[in-house]
Image (spheres, rainbow, N blue to C red):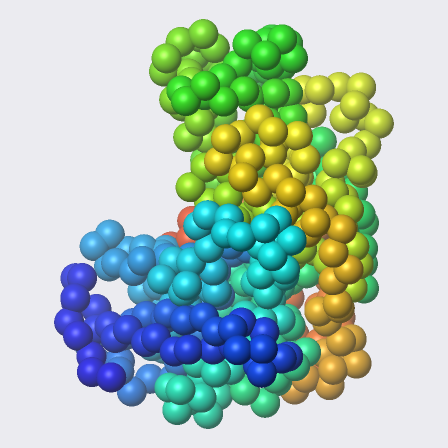
Amino acid sequence: MTWQRSMAGLRTREVRINVPLDHTDPADGRGIEVFARVVAAPDGTDRPHLLFLQGGPGCESPRPSLDPVWPGWLERALADYQVVLLDQRGTGLSSPVSEPLGSAADQAEYLTHLRADEIVADCEDLRAHLGVERWAVLGQSFGGFTALHYLSRHPDSLLAVYFTGGLPAVGRSADDIYAACYETMAGKSLEYYRRFPGDRARMARLLDLAGQEAIRTPNGDLVGPSRVRSLGHLLGGSGGAERLHYLLERDPGSRGFRYDLAGLLPFGGRNALYTVIHESSYADGVVTGWSAARTLPDGFRADPTLLTGEHIFPEWFDEDSSLRPWKDSARLIAGHPWPGLYDPRALSEADVPCAAAVYAHDAYVPMHFSLETASLLPDMHAWITSEYEHNGSNASGGAVLDRLIKLAGGALVR
């Protein structure tokens, strides 16, 4: 594989490998292609490798650039590493899952192979293909969940692991996690309304219209109350509150509002896969059974202006035309008995330098569960910060990753 010069001074090479769909049963004959892009500074092609695991699930890796810098941490990473940007199976250029194929049961069975355990098996195949003895891993959000499974299964393959808003709960049910996220979202909702006092009445009015089936996207899809409430997802990232406010100041009957609303709804659309398999990312040996919908707190039922985050509701598969073809598969996925992802004993024996940015007010990964997990890892340096939201790794322009690299390397004391 030869290096190519591209995009504002970056050196890149593309890697494609064939892997089994089911690593536990490769004899079944089904295979997929996995794509990765290796990126280096012009003078950095002999540096150690850093594998980046993207958030999601169901999201492709970022397409790199230094003009402007994207992702925000990339320039800092390239100072120490050459970076491997993996399109996780089913996404991007890795045998993408874009439309349902076959029966709902066949599609659901296929989707069960897109979880962190199979992604890690792909990573090991990719590492061997590249001839890398050990590499570092950077896991953002769901990518951190995947990185923790990597630590459970293959610690000898890892130089260091950096977690950004992605140190998951171990041994907790999906119900526990969603309940904690609802509590955080209640606080974020109230904080938002204190900042923009008039928006609570605007949101109440919007929810009334949604209940009357009067809110629709430009293509005519119904946006019911629970989809409107999912706009709370914006409150989990820096700048999101402003984006929500600018939406709410528009006339809900206007063309501009409909287009802006469609662009801000976090689920469905271009990446339906994220919605369909999202709850599986919290399934450490459980059946999720539409966990987020089942655990909706009484306070949220009484006050619809309390907004939700990464909480999936089954009625969206009727309302959203991009999700409708996945409805029956999603129902089967919700009833699937998932195997465990994390081995506490293996984690306690993983002698790998680790550092984690634990965001104090993270809307999606509860801080107290992250700290429980941090206590399992013998060489973990957990940094608790309220300076950043869940997207701090990008929003900080590399400052978060810089601190983690120094913490894991012993160059910085907490």
